[in-house]
Length: 631
Image: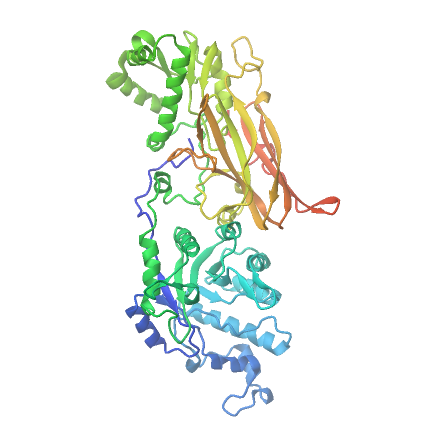
C-alpha cells in the first residue's frame, strides 16, 4: 500500500506547451521582432541583452574618439557605470552576451568579461526577469564557473539557464556524444550543484545513443532549443523531424519544458510554411501524443513528489487512503485469481462445486476478516450488515495476537510495501501463521526486493531542501520521472510464507525477529558515466504458483496503481565514470520494537590487474537513527 493518501488531482493529460522564437539577429529591432513573433503564433522571443557594439568594453576600444586606455574611463566603468540606453536591445531581454570570455588568457578581457556579466545579470534582475540564458562553456571554464557561483551567493533572485548542445560537433574529432554532459556535470559541480542552475538543451542533428539520451532526463531541463537546421522537408516542403527526433521531443513534452525555435537571421530553412510552420509542427507533436495509460493518469501530479512510506502496522490509515487503493482493479483481479486457483487446489470436487461453495459461504467456506484499525472496523461492520451477512465473521484484533477458533486453509493478506517487506509483512505473517493448517496456503506466497542505482538531481534537491541529515536517511515512495537508472535492477532478498523454520514460543509466536534480518551486496557495472544520487527499490510478489504482481520496471503488472517505487537517497552525490564497478550494500535490521534499513555504496574502477575503490559513501541510517518502521 504505497501510493498517495489523497485522490488524484484533476489536471489535463498533457500540459500546454509554450513555444518561443530566437532569430539570431546581430542587431534586432525588438519591437518588430516581438510583433512578428506574435503574428507567427509564438508565445515569446529570445533576444540578447546588449547590442554587439557593447563589445567595445571587452577589448577597450575607442569610444567617441576618446582613447579609454589613456583615461580613467575604463576604471570608472569597472567600478559600476550604468548601461547607456543605446546599448540595450530591449528592456526585458534575458540572454547574456555570448562573446564574453571569462577564461581568456588576457587579463583585461577576463576582468572586463566578469564586469559585463555582472552588469547584465544585475540589469535583468532589476527589471524583474527571474532567469538568464548563459552560454555553453568552452573547454576551459574554471573562472566562468567561479563567477556564476559567486553570483549565486550575492544575487538571490536570478536563475541561470545554461545552453547545452546534445552533441558537440568538432571539426577535427567529429561528433562528441558524451563531452557536453561531462562538461555540464563538471560545471554544476564547481557551482556546488546549485538548485538555481538549470539546462536549456539544444537538440542537434545527430542524436546520441538512447542510453546517453536517457541521462539527460535526470537533469534540470527548463527549455528545449530546436534549430531549424535539424528539421527535414516533407514532400510538400514543410519542416518535419525524423522519427527518432520526434520520439525524443514527445518524451521531452512530458517534462513540461518551454520550446524555442532557433533560426538564422535570414529566415527559415524550408521552402513551405514560413517561420510559423515550425511552431505549428511542434504543436502537432503535442496534440498527437499517445493516450496516457491508467497508471500515467493516476500518477499525474505525483511525479518526483516525495512521500513517506505508509506504516499501517504502527499507524491507523485514513479512509481516503483505502479509497485510493480500491481504485486498483488490477491488484484485486490478481488477488481474486490467486484465491480462485488456491480454492481449486485445496478443495475436492468439481470447479462448479467450488464456485458454488464460495457463493454460499455459510455452507462451504468460512471467512474471517481481521482488522486492527478501529475506524476501518466500523466500515467492515457496515459491509457485514449491508452486504456480507453471515458469510463473513469480522474480528477486531491484531492478527499476531488473535486466538483463532479453528485453523485456516488459506491466509490472504495485503501488507506489501513498495520494497515488498517495508510495511512489515514478514513480521505480521509470522505472527499469523499459527492459525494456518499444516498444509495451509499463504497469499502472497513470497515477495522479492530489487534495487538499482539511480540518478536524479531533482530528487536530490528535494531532499536537500530539508537541510538535515535525517531526510537523507529516510526512504521515500516516489513516481520517478526526472530520473535515470544507471544500471538494471538486481534482486537482493526474498521472503516466503508460511515460514515453517522459525522457532516459536508456547503461543506459536516467533521467539525473536532475527530470522527477518537481511544483508545483501550487489555489484552493478556502470556503462556510461553519471551522477549517483540514490538507490531505487522495487518488488515482485508471487501470490500463488505462477500468479505474480510486480512493480519491477521489466515485469510491472499492467495498469496496477497501488505502489510507486521507493527511493533511498545518498547524502553526497557521487560521480561514476564509465565502466565503474559499483557495489551497493543493503541491510534490513531489527530490534524488539522496530525494523529499519541501512545502505551504502562503494564504487571502484578496474586499473590493470587492480581494482581501485573511490568515493565510498557513509553507511546511511545507522541503528535506524533517522527512519524506522515500528513493530
